Length: 559
Image: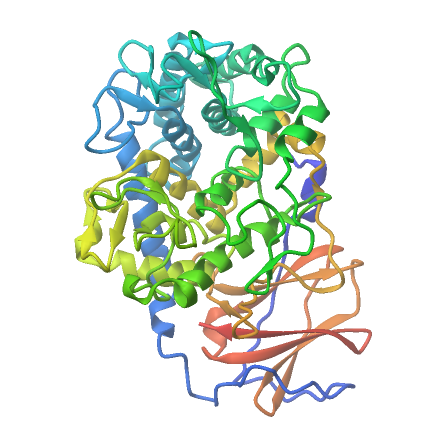
């Protein structure tokens, strides 16, 4: 059983509501509900695509994608080290540290889903640790790429010929910490693997990588010295600072290294919005490649945390919504983006475009879609992610040995056939976080991760009483909801200032108003659950009442 940490008191509390727009009695509230700002769909007039998003279809699709990508690692790993290869059509002996980090993170998912046994998962965990223990290290950090036969660090670029990569090392440690929490028995294999992880944790000299300054450097080469690349946020490198803060005292960095290094000059832009969405972090107004928020929050649950600068659910959600809005409205029309084809992130591309990090904007976008870009938004914008996922899943020329390939470009009639470990391996766990929250829960149990978050000033979320953490599309003024594939409910989040508050909801179907009263209300975030099979697939206006006074309204589209 997983132990409950203090922060878990704010984990979402599910409240099932057995109610139907078709069979509930009309309800007359003390206050007449306002007319919904989004036109409702007449009774019986369903969203035309509603049958594409049934829970049964979602379960099959998501499981197939997760399992296929895990097979890429488990069946196609480097033979000696059991680590993840860079990708298909790459050297069979060169392993990718970050790809292996995401692969390690996915091992508990594979065990929970029944694709491998616990014994097999523990053995792979130990095999990876055994290799990492013999691999070349640089003040405790591993190389970006490693020879899987010898453990020798391999050149990544001209500034990293024989170098430790601190960011990739932090990813690897996050994956190993996840495995340590999952494989927690007294079994000899699991015990030995955990001992290796503790050893690694005690040997990484994070402070060395400051170069005596109030920042972390990305890499250090034993011949060339520090690469001229400081780690500043916000970007995918957040785990490096968190683990540097929570390292053993001898090797840890001080709080001012995080404050001055991570929060650089362009970190916070007070009041900035993009397409109406609050987006105050970072130097890129329309957001960088989608992986920059998806990868660190693979381990860190954005639904739980705020700090003095951001609500991290809002940050991740709005990054996704901005990327989608740009693709559907501002991108060149010849790129042929639409609601089923968007997602700008790092990926391969047709020649001569090649591999690069793609993002909204003329200089960052060339019409190439990263297939895992929109996929990775599923925890925060499930319906919009599933629109893309269903389309990709049903497009034959994008399918390969392990499922959906890396990228495609509609305007150039090009589709890739390759897989890249740093693209596909995170998706296994990202989808699992949407489905069960497994990796997020395991991360909360890890003391180094938890201590790093606390040292960095991450704190539990709070909201005004009312609806919260629902991704409103500002173009329509409504939240597009798809039923959860496993619970088969539509989930709507709301905040209550107190437990057992006198809260109820009314759901408006044209002129009809129906009352929904939760069975239980907790202080903090609650989840109103509407069973998939009880509601028409159409638009509604949802009102929240406390003490018979309406306090909030949310327009919802049940798809």
